[in-house]
Image 1 (cartoon, rainbow, N blue to C red):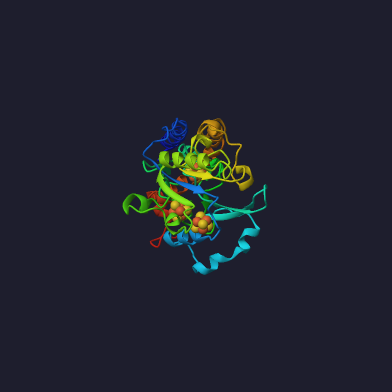
Image 2 (spheres, protein in one colour):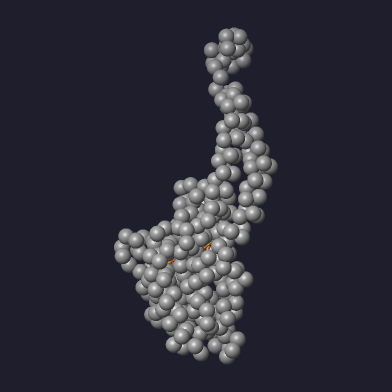
Length: 310
Ligand code: SF4
Ligand code: SF4
Ligand code: SF4
């Protein structure tokens, strides 16, 4: 490959990255009435953590016996999801009466996902069922998705340097799409804290519960409008900021609010970083070319039959 051809290919790849980035920020489809969701009614949750066990089990993540999940010691700290832990339950204190409130945390499967818009190789997609899925085959490991997620969900397999993946809750897509089952965490929940169904129906159910028990609930369905809406929805007896859910996110989808920053990051990367990468590749390709070029007759004269210089 000569220098001109090399630079042409580099420019083509850079251009694709920029154009791809702009397309990635295009407005997402409006919430679809047919999509699924889960309503998490935190007023029912007893903190048994069976959902954590079932999630590990179904996703073949490292697991321990179910009995170990009765350990309440984990509630001393507020935990987040990790590469091999797609969901965690945290404990908060109701400021009104000091009673515990347990809150399950996992990917919210946003209607307009920040992770999806930040990814310039389209490693994420929002399916018709509502699940936001990740494709490790196209991921380049830039981890923009981790920065863009407003709920701090995507994790990275730092312990697998050769084949690292971004990981997060899959909404048990294999169960809800192919096996016609509810997610594993929903199935095992003994208190019906978790209710799986059509998102629109769950929103109606949530408002009905608030109407019927106005003293039990804060008058808000978390996820109905936050960041453009999420597939996982929450009900609570305490203000949502008191139970670990951000209330400063607004109703606009994250792609709308972050596109300026993320697009400029990509521009910077293409202008400042990629030329260095291409220069390194170019130098390597030239070295390889030199190595692969057949020896000329004058070179041959200089080498003996074993290839050693004479
Ligand atoms: S919660 Fe985060 S990881 Fe999940 S869909 Fe939304 S932006 Fe993506
Ligand atoms: S939906 Fe599936 S992957 Fe997501 S938290 Fe529940 S069990 Fe885990
Ligand atoms: S299984 Fe249900 S009740 Fe138990 S911690 Fe999970 S959400 Fe709460």
